[in-house]
Length: 510
Ligand code: GLN
Image (cartoon, rainbow, N blue to C red; front, top):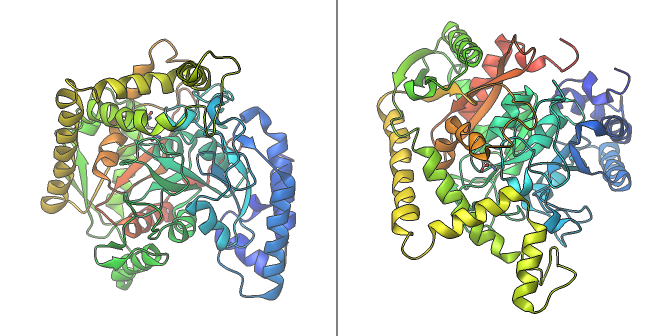
């Protein structure tokens, strides 16, 4: 394909970094070729905002740093942000008509941290409105298309983030995961994604959906590239009230995950960095239920076999409340959303109706016009479960279930296994429009990702195969770790990727 950007020749962040540092190529050349590729791929609808001037400005600054020497780790690396991270200078819409013209006066912490280490932003990525959805079809600006097959969804809500990486428009992107929105689109687009432990990455400047669940995470082609982004993204931030100062005794700051990654690998270094050697992999029986498609079950089983051949052991475990994660999540997340979204009243910012009779009428018209159907559904559900009289029956009950789900994971880790593996999604990517008549069908397909979010655990998705019919659509393997074990997860994924090449396949090249 003639429009493939220059960075695709390097295949990894580290390889591109070396070329930039050796002055074999400039950050501006990299940025310009990515901008061209984005221009040529508008049919994917992965990007909502591109601003060549801003991108080139960042690239020129990167080149100046590279010329001086001692440039930080991601200097000149092309990335892009999900449009729920606020950005100074670029619009931030959260894929909603409500914020169609919103420009933030400040950058989200994730955005400024990546900029501080030199990453060059190519723009803002499409997603489900306010990150509510599983297919990136709920965007007010039209659906995102899956680069493997444009008739299919890329997953969601971080669908633009996964599609942009899969189509090689950027080397990596940021996403957010409230109930699976980094892992699920990564799985359906054949790329890698990680959701870290809740509280390790700052939520400051992330448009809030379900605040006790929302967590940012990167999407890239492979585990090492994820490490390159996740490590500098994470760290304590006093502007986020749930940000953690320490993780298991270690200060929460950039370097923590890289340090743990090194230890995990070094621990086994006598055998040549083998994080899978002797590893007990818990396989929950509830993840292999009736709803799981045969091709996904087969690919995940093959991946587990590969892990066994690398020294791991499979252990059967049970996460008995897996099914309850759906009702619990779809009570808690909408409850928090209904509260978070009450700020869009048409007064200070956001869409305001043109004609209205009084203040109350202005608020209700502005909200009726600004929010899309799925967002309204969540606000209605959330308001209902928080009503006096229903609060105990729904919200409080869901909180109790949430605690039990977290305990189930803790019991598995304490008694049976080091990590847990299974599918990310029950099927490969569905057709755009498939669940239009029944929005709850999408909710049910979140079954394998919601429990992790309710428990606040880290988890990732890496490519582990493709469907033969319809061909070829990617399948993801989910790897779940105990709190703060991001480094271990990445080391395991890296080892798996040294032994397989699923993560190297690109749409149109198979
Ligand atoms: N699909 C889930 C939902 O619609 C998860 C979304 C997310 O993680 N942002 O709520």
